[in-house]
Image (cartoon, rainbow, N blue to C red; front, side, top):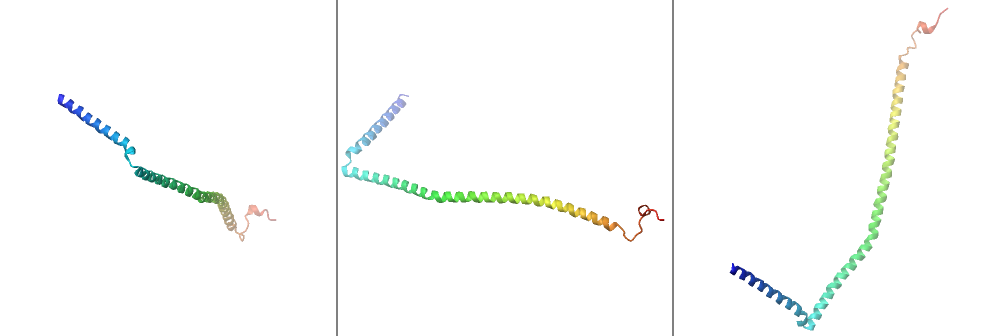
Length: 137
């Protein structure tokens, strides 16, 4: 048990030593680099930042340039939808009127057929019935 505790203490000590060494190296790098190398790194970082800023500027300009045509397309589509809606309403109204007219003319045809059949049943050449003809003197 004691050896197990000693191993843990030694591993923590090793870890602590490595952490102190890494922190010392990181803190001493800016002081130990030659001036030329630090200037070169600074220029590279500035170039990376310039590239990033330029990409942001270009994407912003493209968004602004495409905003107009995209808006025109959206407005055109909205107008087309409104036209189609109006046409649909007109077609529905015409369809309802046509249905009313079909019923009216269907009833008119049926009524005229009934009248035609009644007229055809009348025998004009036959003698009138006695009750309708009245008294003969």
